[in-house]
Image 1 (cartoon, rainbow, N blue to C red):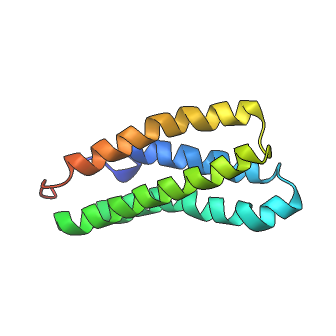
Image 2 (image 1 turned 90 degrees about the vertical axis):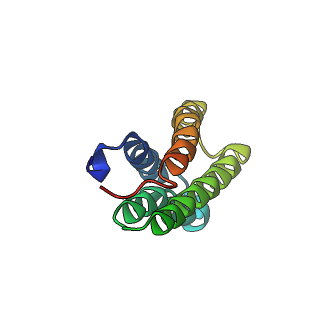
Length: 121
């Protein structure tokens, strides 16, 4: 069985949260205090829930946390849409976020599907 940090879906979730973490420093104070804290928490929660689910024994427990990860992923996308709409982040950053999000979403869904009924090794 792979270690959690060896999984593509986990690595991409970490990549997204790191990109958000470092983008936070470039944001104005108002944005940092409002959207900034929220998006950091939601993006960090994606990988955290994948990791927590990975450490659970039953399929039902694992699936529950993977679904929480998907919920956090959707929340993160919501905050990013606000930042884009309000012209807070640059076009280059939007492209970087889009690339990761377009890969992570399908990987996360596939990961959830593939672990539905598999017993833990």
